Image (cartoon, rainbow, N blue to C red; front, side):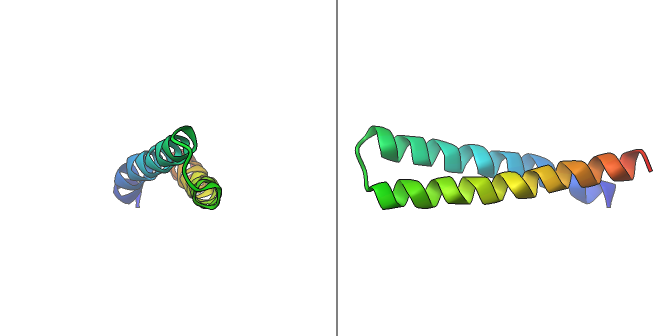
Length: 63
């Protein structure tokens, strides 16, 4: 399980960063507000997943 988390955490963090940058890019270039809103909502969901993965890793490590 620990090895799975070793790979899943960086992937989740990269996904958060990519969606954040896409949302910011869309807002800066004056794109669709609904697209920016959708991307920011996805960012929140991905952040929740990343936090859960980190918490699971900490729990498994110090169990």
